[in-house]
Every structure is written in C-alpha cells, then in structure tokens.
Length: 192
Image (cartoon, rainbow, N blue to C red; front, side, top):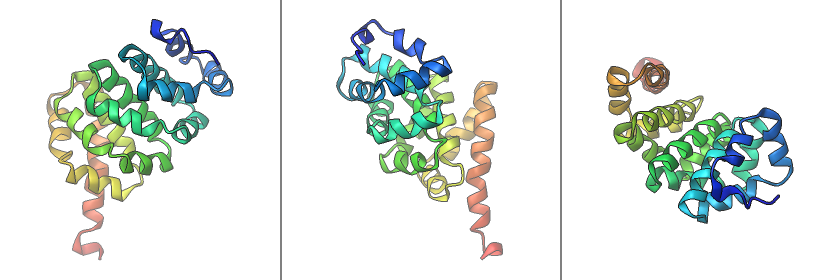
C-alpha cells in the first residue's frame, strides 16, 4: 500500500474512521508502514500516522496487528516526547490498544504507564482525557498494572482530574480509581 499522501496529513486518518476502511487498510498492508512512520517519520508523518493508528486500533483485529507490527513502543515514545497532537493521538491509540489483554501487558513492559500518568498530571485537557482513558483500560483485569499505576503516582492526578477536569475526564477517572482501589482492598489483611 502506498502511503505517499501521509505528509499531507489527515487523509488516511480520515479514511480510517470508517469501519470498513479500518479492515481494508489493514488487509492492504497499511499497518506496518504506519508504525514505521510513527517510529521514524517527520513530525507531520508521525502525527498523521499516530492519528491513523488511533482510528485503526478501534478494530479488535487491528489491535493485535498493530502490536505485532511493533507499534506499541513507538506510540509510548510519542506520549513521552512527541508534540502536543502526537501525545494526544498516541495516548488515544494506546487507550484503544489496551482494550486487548495482551496489549495491556505489552504497554506496561514498553514503559507506557509512567508517561501516561505524567500526561494525566500535566497535559492539555484532551491529553489528560486520553491518558486517563488509557490508564482505565490498562487497569482492567490486570493487578500488576494497577499496582504500577499507583507506584507511578497515578492516584493523585486522577483524583485531581475528577475534581477539576471535564465530565468526560471524570467519567474515565472514577472507574480507573475504582480499579486501583480494588487491588488494594483485595490485598488487605481481611482477604488474606
């Protein structure tokens, strides 16, 4: 699949919004080149590719394909050190990818929890929402990730976001905090 139009921004990202196109782009071999662009493209290419992967990762088969193509580590790197838009879209892509249980483990192993916590703490409003959504999925049915989020200092910024964030952010933070509290509760002496 030729991705020569990616420098012009949202064309592929916009195509990837359609469910049928998500499948078609993956079948045409579009995921690996997008991962490569996230890894080593220009700033504009990284932005466009991260946006496309965010959309593509809404499809369950694509979640697996993006991980197999090595897409998790470069997305984590964008959350750490990308531009504002790159951080937002990479965090959103990780949110979608973390709906898959194996990807939850892979994102944690790639060092994704600490930069997502940092983004909840100091990102823009939209970045905070995307990072909170990603942490919410990372904490789903994964006690190791719940503990890692707490150890990375994730509880305080999530509580702050509940207090002062948007209603969307609060709707993500409350269930995430509930998941974090659950692991502490189940590890209490009463359950040993």
